[in-house]
Amino acid sequence: MQGYKNHAEKIDLIRSGKLSLKENVKGFLYRIEKEKKLNAFNYVFNDAIDTAILVEQKLKENRAGRLAGMVLAIKDVLSMKDRPLTCSSNILKNFEAIYTATAVQKLIDEDAIIIGKTNCDEFAMGSSNENSAFGAVLNPFDNTRVPGGSSGGSAVAAAADLCDASIGTDTGGSIRQPAAFCGLFGLKPTYGRVSRFGLTAYGSSFDTIGPFAKNIYDIALILEVISGNDKNDSTSSNQSVPKFVDKIKCDKKFTIGLPKEYFSAGLDPEIRKRITDELEKIKLSGSQLVDISLPHTEYSIPTYYILTTAEASSNLARYDGAHYGYRAKNVASLNEMYIKSRTEGFGSEVKRRIMLGTYVLSAGYYDAYYRKAQKVRRLLKQDFDNAFKEVDLIITPTTPTVAFKIGEKSTDPLQMYLMDIYTTSVNLAGIPGINIPLGNNSVGLPIGMQVMAKEFDELSLLQFSFNNF
Ligand code: GLN
Image (cartoon, rainbow, N blue to C red; front, side, top):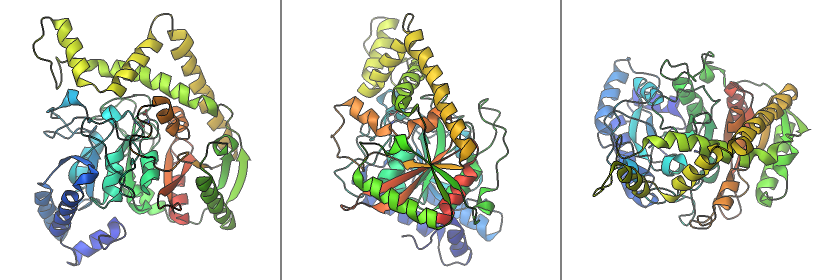
């Protein structure tokens, strides 16, 4: 669309004088304005043009970073100093971040250009981007449909060419599912691979940060930049970060597991057929396919929604009207201030989760729900550990259906939660997963395929994707 296929080509064009970075950024700003109805951005940074001029200069002088001139959109749950940080919630209306998230800082340090903050479900809770104080985001393939969530704005920004690539977060599928609905590559790294410092917490033992792009080279490059240990996040891993970009091209053959539980009834027949056809091609290219079982799969949705709501109820206690953002007016007491600020500031899905989470953690129910769910989480992890003794990768659908209509599921939370049926297990186990776009269905809506790997083996995901798609 922009005249280059990936970031390496973009840099070449700028260096050779065939592409002006300033004009390129202006072009994106123009497109953002033109496609305003998609509602992908909460905030657009017009000063990105100034950064473009500086980066172009650096490039000419050969002192630019590895992401020089890559135009990125950032989900509005990630902090950027002195920029708004709302998490698409009224409770953080007018709140500005006082520091920059480590992942975002690393992008800036490599001379990426941040063009704005993207719309998302409130506090990243949702699968459709309809739970946003900024309103729904429209799917660029069909404006009557959702883009997926919770990183819907980031997915649309990348899919509709409003930026080169974007950053989202994935707690239960929020990168992979919108990537599937919008025809993009979207990678959820291993838990701990990327520092969460400066990411607004939803489910702290699940939250991850990762990229969306139309090509795997850019995904690998962004991942390489944002990964690594950070003293500001004690859960960030000190595993070394492979040189993903240098290593993606290879002719490695993989043993691939196909878990029968992920191909059962309820899967859209067109998605099933497309993945089956793709598997045939993969087999012909020399990889080996093996039928496997992940026997505890049916528990992943309830386990996920018990544990993440518990973590959310604790994480969201800090929004009390006193510390951040919105404070209710005309209150007679401190208690009333807390109650009114939270009642008026949070949307209904966030309130539902705070109540659910408080319930599962309460005395008397803790053992029955929270503790039990922790045990099931371990069993789910063991399923994967066992599977990865036999196989290198696991392939499943990313979503049971293609993008659904706006409003279709918003009155039925359980139907909405079922959209995460193939994605939450990856977060429960802490392993990495990627969505691979497989083209569109018969009515032009994107279909996605999910590939999972063992902990810290993002390299295999990238190699497999790069060499087959
Ligand atoms: N749809 C899931 C949820 O609502 C996942 C959200 C996410 O990954 N942030 O919890």
